[in-house]
Image (cartoon, rainbow, N blue to C red; front, side, top):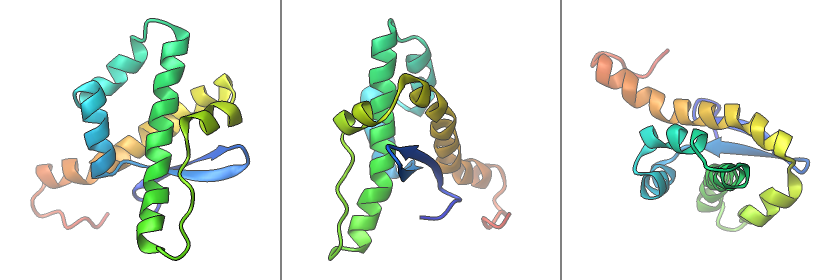
Length: 127
């Protein structure tokens, strides 16, 4: 995975790349009604446990995108996808709070190119 599209986190001693793919965007839209509603939902979670559940779901979704891409490209050497249970067991609430920055970075990187290309038709993606 290239760094232009991902943000790295470490869960239980293993590095994972958080990637906002089209598939992840569709899942987020199904759950929240769109990317624009995501931040508001996370901040307005009625209680701490609910907020943790949402962050765990989102980390699992975004981390699994890089695993699924790997599996697509390496059918002979697939990796196991991450489960929400694993994320819960291998992290602390403090770590989850620190992953919010990585989630934001992955979201920004995943949508940045689209936003740039809308604003400047001459932009070829070179930065």
